[in-house]
Image (cartoon, rainbow, N blue to C red; front, side, top):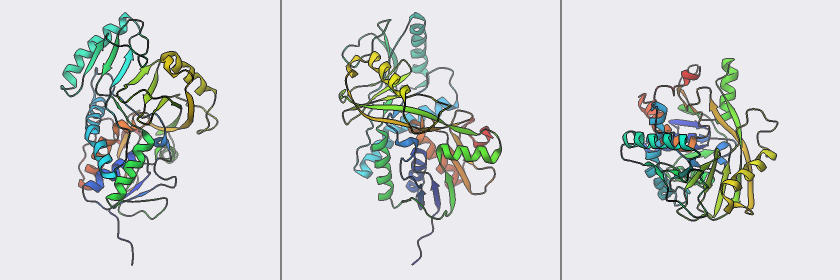
Length: 348
């Protein structure tokens, strides 16, 4: 008996691909996901998992989209956990940032005012001086920014749970297979490279990042820390991830090197509690960054019935719930809800 025809084929089982598959399957589409590396085989198989907003100022469609997606995450990830009966590592414990000097303090206070207007009472950005304990980075001003829009995820647990949820919904996830129906290309850095080659000019590229995973239990209510440009992420399984580097030139996309040792040294300076923690994993991979720096979404201008969902870069997990939604709008309903600046042609 021949296999049933699929409405949608998703190429790529990273966070964008799986989220698009999930949004389409929830609306009743028959979906197949194809990825030779399997779920999370690329950048989505990393270890950090920061879900963090842009600053609440100079508001634009990208910031609004990310805000909406982070709010949507509050139901998206619990739904995935319920469907899959698997832990995702999603926790809404906020983010703490030390304030370096008086100028930064004034800026933080102004942004707190903006957040009250822009975040519509759904999240808070505030300056606090009431912080102590081993999970508090030192602050030269004695003040910190704390926001409640930020959350964090355990990327590998989250990808596994999302894949299990999809399988429970009848979605086929395979390492090879034929493309049927409309196609969503969510192939990450490799896909950006192929588009660049096809166009003969830069569309996007993979930017290497390195991160490190430590054995340290910060506790269930610990916020993520952003200090000295580092994301320090406490995970539910008693680990802490620190990342990452940003490398445009490299010899190997997946090899770690001395740059990661520097990351660890800086993290220990930010949080002395991490000193001596056992190193569990050292990760490196290519994050897909579109030329515009925003996610790249919409129809492929050259190929009928083919759509692109790419360019998550460092904020793919935070953007993914909303990305899946707008791609499903387009692919299933021919309705374009993609914000200005996110269209594929903005990178063309």
